[in-house]
Length: 182
Image: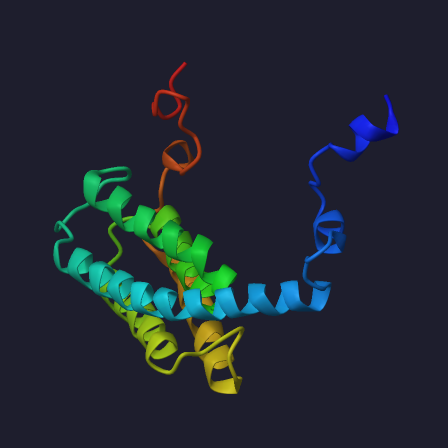
């Protein structure tokens, strides 16, 4: 390979692109990235508010008895997974923790008499985070709130009369979406 053909190779690494004539410094690139993230964060806060409203609507639509993997359960679970997976990118670590905790409850406890109470407490916690724009893990009040939610779900997982059958646990589906079937 000649040096001339080598010089025509596209610059793919960030370091190479920043060093080209007219390029920007690494500090400027980081600054621009942070500005873009801050701009998207505002969009995420609006999305978070919409997601919480959707969870509230879904709670009102809950059937008296819901079965693992029924449409309602799947819809709630999908929304919580979306919230959990995106929140950390925008430094909303509490949204991730709260969503994860409610997912743990849904995945392990079935037809619990305390369902509405537990769901309400998680929704209230999410609303607190969104309303007060709590970033990261929050302050002492938020950490205590998260600790209480974790303890409540742990208690219900241990003491609920109906626990999910492990065969119905999420992630046991094959490529066709069939649970535990060969």
